[in-house]
Length: 238
Picture 1 (cartoon, helix red, strand yellow):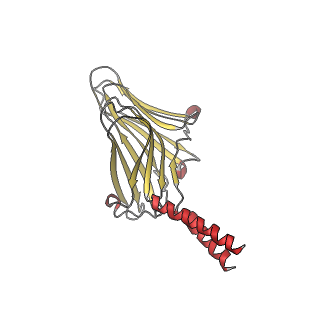
Picture 2 (cartoon, one colour):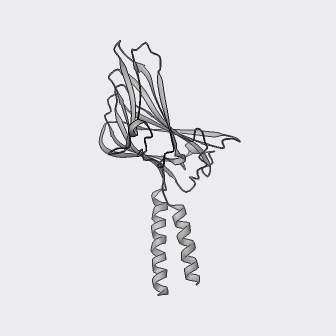
Picture 3 (spheres, one colour):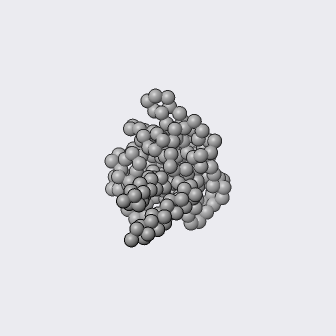
């Protein structure tokens, strides 16, 4: 009886402590015909035009809502310069950003804008962004993660930035360490809003596969070790 109780408690603790939390795998577009397409364009005299789209009722998005914003921050020449973002839920799922030569801009995705997420990330030490490709046309791709806690009482927002320094073909990951000093003062047990801003250079294109909060490797290894212990205890009981 004691063995059964111990293994049940340990199993519950492990399952609660080392599971990943999917923020967005971009399999829900919630736009016309299963696609979210937003873009801004025009000559260089148009000052920082922007466009956004908010999808609601998204089953594979944390909080069920995603606000996607694309903004052109600079352009050269007199020809039409465009920056665009798209999310498609048919075929491979991803967030894709494209820009014409001579155009610079960024795309952001935000979660928890209208309704606070109240998400507990205390067991998730890394915030992982998975990229599929990046052409590196205009220099590094600067990615900024902003987390906000205490909405409605004493809001605290912290931001950390990392960069992809060169072009890539094939997948790669970018990990934000939630235990670092960048996130000091944030209540990870109650994160209300998440925003990720992707800021490439002129004429750059890139693709994002997913945004996920995961445990650090040591936590996962501890979880696997615990599962192994459960199996040993069960065998001994038999």
